[in-house]
Length: 519
View (cartoon, rainbow, N blue to C red):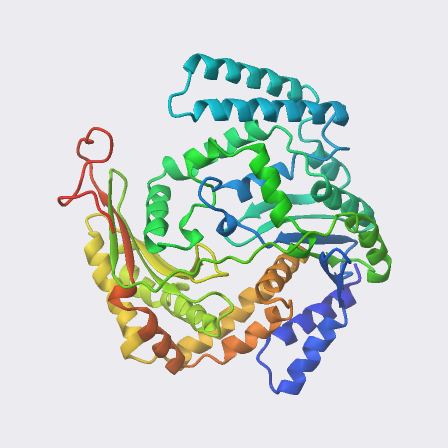
């Protein structure tokens, strides 16, 4: 449908993402894209980016909230992710048979839970009283459950032709997204504004149990999950990046609906949110709809900025985790946040070391020395907004030790400091990076997600396209400079799974090599 326009748009995007023959030409390409893009901010501070892309009669959107696990403090870890789950439970109009009665039942349930929580946390709890209060909570929870219409929010979207309903929580952001037919823009505006205008903490404690199970499955029952949690907690000594996004189990068993409501009030301020809508749309028609629905959300103060800054690392840290699973080797190095000018250099390092069969780590560890079945590197872990980690990892082949992998990997990292990378490697990196970005922008949803990310990171969605200029500017000297600054012994954290098939010591894993590991 409208193939001529679709082809023209693809050509325009390709021109924006291609190396600029001259600054004026590039500026004109970006100006052409801007002509199809409208930035609109409501009086309450909610920002909307509207991109006209009438290739098919559909649109996609992404609402990103500038909050993630980095905004959590001890005692409520996992709450950003928990609220993401709550946002699918419906509204006062969707997901209930009688909201006014349900609302009272939820308040009764929460009062009962808080009373039980207070009793069980006493220094010398009265066990009989604790059991009595728990029974009262369970009765109140069962009463609140009688009003619930399960999964109605998602069913409404499915029934109206919606696809791709999903969300995520990261260390930096929380995102919500799906796609709808072009004639459903008012439905989108109603549903999305409603679930953030009147969030209903429906089935809160049952859903908290679901999140606990997620943690058991993805972290506690997975050797890699356990190692990664130890690795992050060791690499960061102060910054909240050290906390798992899913949360610690004790917090998942303790934070309350009241905590979640306070978290929402603080961080889901309209000024802390951006929504990108891409597809077959008319901004002049859509903006009044956005004003009518999203404008209902009350303006609130901006959340406070994150205060804690991770201090410089001054000593190498090593974790050795005994486990009967296969070995795994990881090493990481602190680096600046994604908005730093050197981010493009780290992208180049990642590509040269681990992108494809021509990459250095693959050729050395996998193909030539046959030390690993897989190896990769990347940056932006566990988040990218603040000072984060560049890391490399490898899965050793049978009979290969972590130390052998370590030696070969460090030789390749050292080469970045002592030998300039080749022009061919940089050209390959720049070509692939542009192609990857272009592929990510082909879909309405991909473009919406990317624009939302860049707007929150940089305060300007245009930085998505300007990033190509930064990639083109990377030189061999830049790679050497950044490698020398970053890849030092005292700036390194190492984690490894040491295969241990022996008997377990009582209360935990049996130590390997004379100790259980540590910093």
